[in-house]
Length: 349
Image 1 (spheres, rainbow, N blue to C red):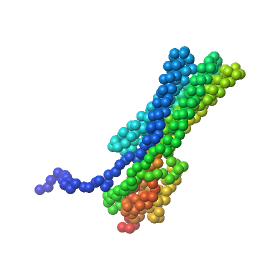
Image 2: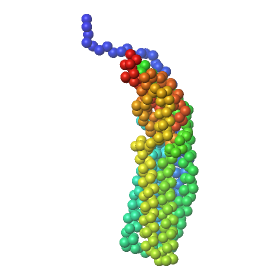
Image 3: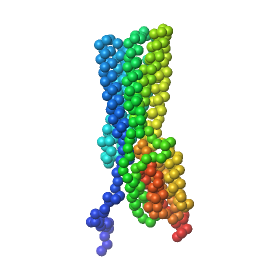
Image 4: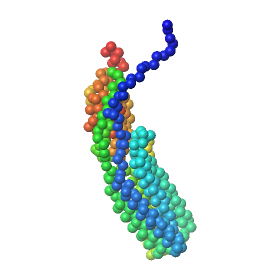
């Protein structure tokens, strides 16, 4: 008796040992030093901001009030950077993030670049308005405000200097072999290591964003001192908005550079020709294998992920391709798909 029912495969009751094939996707250990120092800089900035706003309100000094609220914009950006560190660490093992949470920090850096650009635009608009309609300046009060701002920002810059290399790597190389059939092999290799390609080693963009905000504030303080000295000694009131425009241009340049670097990373448009060449040379070292596709992107400050599709007349075992890439420490996640050359298969048949 014939039946049209589709017979389902019998599921095995054997529980496979899959522990060897599972691995952590925490590709970046974070930057504890940068996080701590960002918190310290944020607290210093907030305290200075409150003191300046309170003093400005009590004394009626617009210079103090303006600088206090200006520091508030930078404090907000620092708060975002600190929040990014905390969230990236808290969600590091969340399975929703297929390639880790490091890009939360990069996203915060991109947001900071936008905020910094807006600060530059605001300074430029105000400077142009004052060039058109000069405003009297209380040089004595404004001078001391600028001095305080400069000292605070120099302290913050000192705290942040060197914190960029404060992150640590952890973990150990982990290799998985998966043989699906004779001519279709997926190979995975996972490891953590210090990058050797210093030209393409990523900086901590989140910390860099905080540092640029501090530098921008320090720059405005220095330029203000120059302008106030010119106004007090030579009567050049126009010098204040003029140097303001110079500062706005420099801040805009910093904002664009920070935004470009973080956007390239977010969009996986960060080329690394040296690493790509290393991978290609290693995979094709047998003279038979050819690379059909190669996708390379950053998943941590010093770690990269790669997906490659290779074609060969006589495909090697997955372990062979693992071995060819094992010496490249920057590769934290590797997936290699191996295919037999169709024309070669017909010829051999």
